[in-house]
Every structure is written in C-alpha cells, then in structure tokens.
Length: 304
Image 1 (cartoon, rainbow, N blue to C red):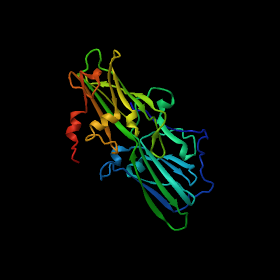
Image 2 (cartoon, helix red, strand yellow):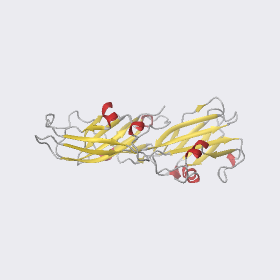
Image 3 (cartoon, rainbow, N blue to C red):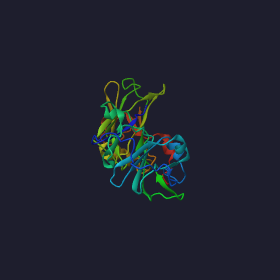
Image 4 (spheres, one colour):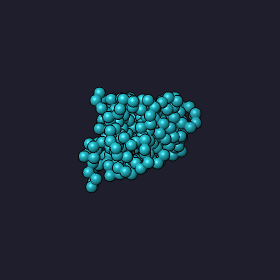
C-alpha cells in the first residue's frame, strides 16, 4: 500500500563503482563499529519496533559516496554493524531506515534526494514509507597490527508524519469512498533529513469498514510549511466536503498534535450529521464536524 522510496540525484554521474578503494584492507584487524539507536520521543530503545531495514552510505571528506550497502538482517536485529575497510580519514555515515533505496546515481552527498517511486514515474502517489534517518561523523585512524575497536552511535530521527483521516456517517451522495487528497506535500527528502521539492498532491487510499466509517492512513515527508498544506475531501458525486489547512488544524488541536515529535500523528475526523461549524466561514461544512478521533483525545494527556 505504501510507496517504495527511491533515491535520485540532480546529476547523472553514473552508478557507484563496485570497488571503492585501491588498497586491500581485508586482512586488517581494526574494527570500526556503528551502533544504531532510535528512542523516538522517550528514553527507551524502540529501534526494533520501528525500523526493520537499514541502508548505510559512507561519504568521504569531499562528500563523495565511497560505499553503500544494505545491512544484513542480523546487524539490524543486533543494532550493530561494522564499517567497511576504509583508508584513514574523516567520514560521514548516513543511515536510512525502511526505505528500499534504489538507483543511487550520484556520488555527491549534497545532491542525493529521496522520493516515492510513483512520484518519479509521474504516477499518483498515495503516501510514503515510514522513513528514518541518522547521520554521524566518524574518524578512521588507520590500521596497525594491534586489534583496535571503536564504536560510535547513529541516533535515528523520524523523517515522516503519520496522517490519519476518518470520514464518518457520509450520506449516499458522498459515498463510501470519497476522494481524500493531501495538497501541497513536499515530495522529497535529502540526506540532511530536510523535506523539499516542488509541492505535489497525494491521493490517499481509502478503506470502508462496512458500517459508517471510511479510513485513510499513510505517511508524508516531514515538511515544515504547514500553512501551505491542505487536506481536501471530495464526495463521489464531486461535492467538496472539506478543505482543511494543516497549520489551522494543528493549532486548533495543538494539545494533541505536536509536529516537533518524532512519532507525530496528524489525525482528522470528518463526521456528518451535526450542525457545528468546524471553522468560521466554512459554510460548505455546515452539516459536518471536523475534529480528531476521540480515542486520541483519551490517549493523550495534555498536561504532559
């Protein structure tokens, strides 16, 4: 259901060569290790719960990618891996989680971007994978006959927002599968964990429970321009049901929605059969209430 992410470049420099180094360090005893950690918004390790696939990229002092690899499952499970043999020097290690990265077409760290594969192919995008990112500087001190070990920790951060939309008690002309769009979404993320790119629109997949509720849930890149992003809901007959600005919605429910958190859910509940206006001037929404799911209100304690 979620779109596979794909890495691209602003230049076509060709794929990485299969051999990044001119010298063979395979007999060296030095071991430079990388520990992987993700605490989310707490103090307990939740890496195994959130991240099941990691790709590691090694960049040299000139921001050139000298190594890229998908870490073995055993390394991900152990949250520990060993760096490839590297000449002495300063490096930046970038790890991305749950992305399914493909087609790294540039060695230039500053020009690598991520986007949904459907977006790159000009297709309709319904959402992104749960993306996580970590970056750590690492100094390789060279090799000696002595066994030498050093471990640094890559602290992962979230690169996505989780979006949940509920449409409840929709009348027949709206239908069980109204069109739910996310407008003005940032479609790309770079290797500094910054969402960017020409704003685009996503159309979310919907599921009806057979009773009264249509649900859509997926992720988007972690944009910062909330005032430029909208949720639009249109009935099956073309009737515009709601146009909700993200910044307004987040502000209205700021005690429950904190976009600075790693694990941030931005929920919308659009319920028919009421007379409450969601926002002043939203006359076309006069018969609906726009709020957030009651279970979230019960779950979140505003005093914390």
